[in-house]
Length: 76
Image (cartoon, rainbow, N blue to C red):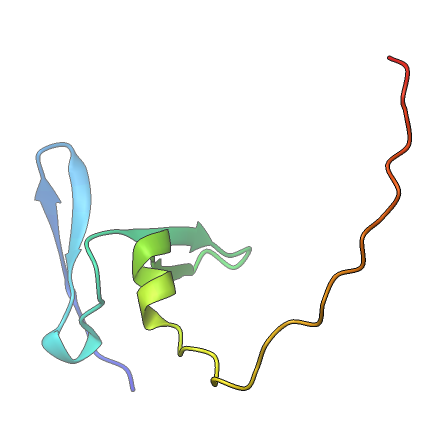
């Protein structure tokens, strides 16, 4: 889907008015310029938001026991 969006100045920065159907979650985005001059805009997820978005592990899904390893003396 493609739409035309308006550009405007906000103080000394150029801004784009994003149509409602392209609304992004959060309050920040990352912007990357491609070699052809186009921009890729991605929502910037903070760690807490990312963790909250993950599905919990099923109850039977546990990690295998980790074997004890011998500790070696190291001289620094």
